[in-house]
Length: 284
Ligand SMILES: [Zn+2]
Image 1 (spheres, protein in one colour):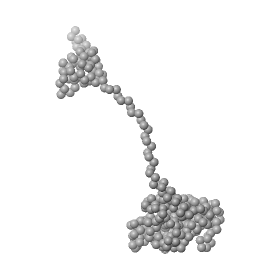
Image 2 (tube, rainbow, N blue to C red):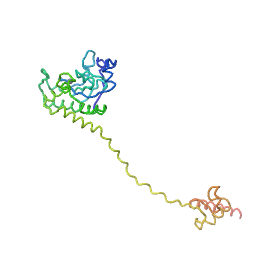
Image 3 (cartoon, rainbow, N blue to C red):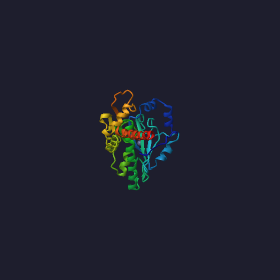
Image 4 (cartoon, helix red, strand yellow):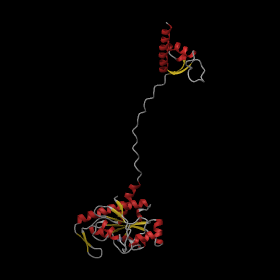
């Protein structure tokens, strides 16, 4: 979803919200939206940026939360989602976020919401672009505000419920282009998109199973002189009896304790032989 914020800060509606002009603004800002209303702009203008600019002035009696571009599917957020907008012309303004879909430039309006289609294929493509972006945006808003897609209505449905002014959007636009879109279909599409958003993140890929390194060979620790190889025993006895090795720590008093690996014993015996040989030389 290509959503950008460009708030219509100069619009009176925006300023009323900043000032929290009356309890309706406070309530919307405190409690957040209770539903979402889908509109289409009702004129042959596909550019969302054009509308943002048009509304970002004082003296306009319209302010929607977002407008969806029909050319490129980007969305301009015009009001913070928890601001009370001016889009429904009725009490839905107190409860609903309002979103406008731009309409194709390949249509030409006459009167009373009637239009002729100049290039059906291109106009339908514009329509699909805005519709798909609207599905994504509404799913996002449902998730964000814990709203069921059943709280979504069109401006036309809002009028039927007595919460919006007498408009036929966006159904008149879909119908006029020969699209198969309906509000029930829209709600179902939003539900599908919402289900995707709510899907738990895929489980992390398990790390490859590594074979543990083979255990180190058991230590060839010689604990006691009687466990030492026979060839080492006489020299070890001499060292033990002479007090040169005590078999471990000072606390250990067993005269037979060695507690050395065979490698250590070999090193000690090599050194001992060397020293013995040197002493023998000196004695000559
Ligand atoms: Zn409308």
